[in-house]
Length: 115
Figure 1 (cartoon, one colour):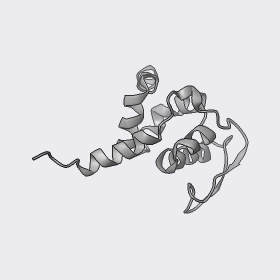
Figure 2 (spheres, one colour):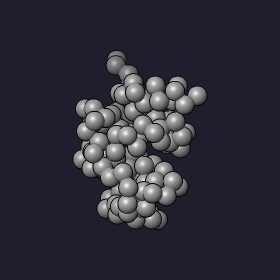
Figure 3 (cartoon, helix red, strand yellow):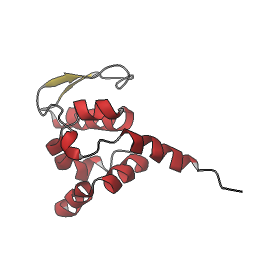
Figure 4 (cartoon, one colour):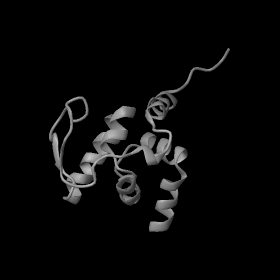
């Protein structure tokens, strides 16, 4: 009898299905104020000033955790994600972190470069 996938496997598969094919697809804003739709920011703040480091980090945490493929592409920026990743990876769930780092070696390398 084949074993059923565990909860961790199911969560990781959910995040993996949402990923862009390449980080270069992430063409979201780098600066300014951004309002997230309620399906992403359904609790708390919905508007974020990306020029303020704490708000930028919160924005990225929300989009990574809640975003579907189109949201990730629209709201995340490739260069910002790489720059934020060494800290951001400690603030997102293990499932999100491992899925993104497995799919995109440049994220894992950004952590090593920051160490």
